[in-house]
Image 1 (cartoon, rainbow, N blue to C red):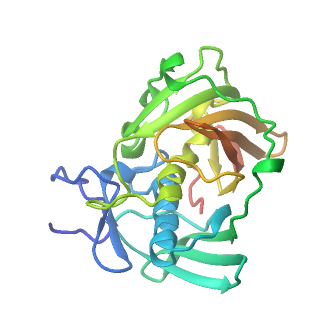
Image 2 (image 1 turned 90 degrees about the horizontal axis):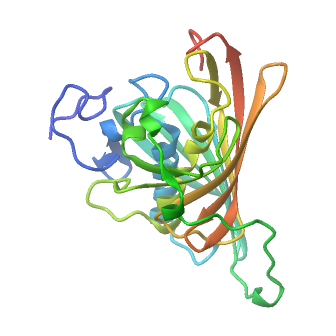
Length: 278
């Protein structure tokens, strides 16, 4: 399959696989149109990009330790086309370890991640969860997510949302049939995480195009390892008076709550995408 170095596969109308990426080598990939972002057509959405970064950590550094926290910082436009994933252990340990990973396009790094993995122990006797379980997906209505957002990633999603959802507050479920990499099975946590960056777009406080509110990071905490499939969100969106915002969600898989996700927002009134951002 021919690869254009700086374009999504499918950008020019050619056939492309039902996956977010195609593997080109041990560390190299090319994005497909399914990974296209919502703010501009020539970029990737952080959802599949973050999933791919974590998938490579899980694939290259298999461990019986559990993922406790994953944080992603967006350092610039997540370019479409060819990319490389780098992975490094920066704090090894028998019970606690810290891993850094990044996505780069040539010499330009767009996403940098830090992942804490902790040793598994039996804490069944003292477990306690304060989050309220979500209604199941079939109890919620189908949502036309593409009526609010554009891009190939959005088109790849099935979204269900509670009838009580309103701007800034709501409960939702999301899933996709596409794997991260063509011909490969998603690693367990990465298959769940690839959908988490949708949180900022689920119950938008203001319509995109009138207000710009992109997130510059994505931070996830788990108290249980999630199961891929349906991903549930109990979401709140807050805009402050000076250009700062935050989207936060309680996360669930089909068995119940698993953790939280938060996104720091840059809020710009009257702008779709500020010239030169990132």
